[in-house]
Length: 442
Image 1: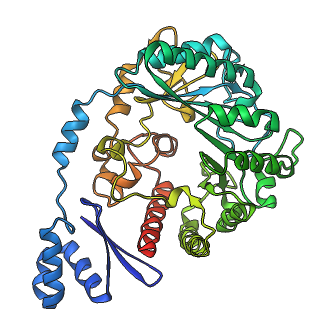
Image 2: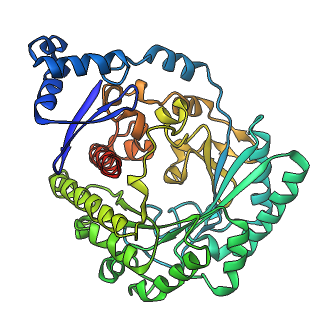
């Protein structure tokens, strides 16, 4: 399978099976497009074009066959272990962001799961991860919320506990923190920088964009309160091992300006994500917005390339791609591993496939005391890979999007195997732009 596309003046062709990327002229693009429907059309192509295409096919750089059966066999026989936890340190938040999927950070859960995670529950969670990680040495723990810094003393105690368990078990914890930044201060920078491998900092971009959605308890915008604190932490980390992460909605379809605002502030690691929201929400993205968003991603790719050429480049999360290396095949076809390799833990110790399923009783897998009780759901998530999804199995982007977000699929269709259309289309455009940037760099 190949994928042909054009951005700017470049005609590009991705060979899906091998990951080879080619730049071609108009005539070659025409022949390759015809060959996707009928390979025999190469016999009618100009000799020089036909000879080059046949040579690339022989070298497994065009129309490389997929060994789908081998992938399916591997996925059917593998036995994944839990390697990462999302610890909900607080089902509470000091902001009231309008697009929050977690109901203002409370997740709209029962009283038992409101408030802050007790230290003993956190310790049980780390013990659970160790016990269910098999022979895997490297483990990941993200302190999440709500706002985890509302419970920061417990976070620090759990990091200390994790270090003790490392010595006793030979495991290695990689701790990360996801925060809105409101409680950051110079006093905590040293601790965060010493103990956290990565930090995700929430900032939506331009002040008016951020303030429209990310408000405090009084309904006031939080940009002025947060932006300098987030920047100070990024500065203190030498602009490494962090992302400043924003969300764009239907109110800022020109989100490239928000990325560039963050770049102009001095941030070097940036991610701006499309909002995940019910279709009836006034700020949710619509299919009618896709052409505008596609053009915006291409505009952003050119703007970032211009900065890079000027010696002031930044890393935009969705445009970073490695065609020569990248993750293993299991990761390529399953993505984050929600429900099998990655679990969310609530303040009371309940287990869910990921943070976006928390509060949905149908997806409560068990708790830290009983362990996983709904093994049928775990099995369903484990086998949820691209070749089990009819819409993904024949898609050119399957090895680069990994089938998309399982939670988005469930919330949009009630089925974890049917990807959300808008998310899918945006992901494919981001991949095209990432490939375009690779071509421009070469």
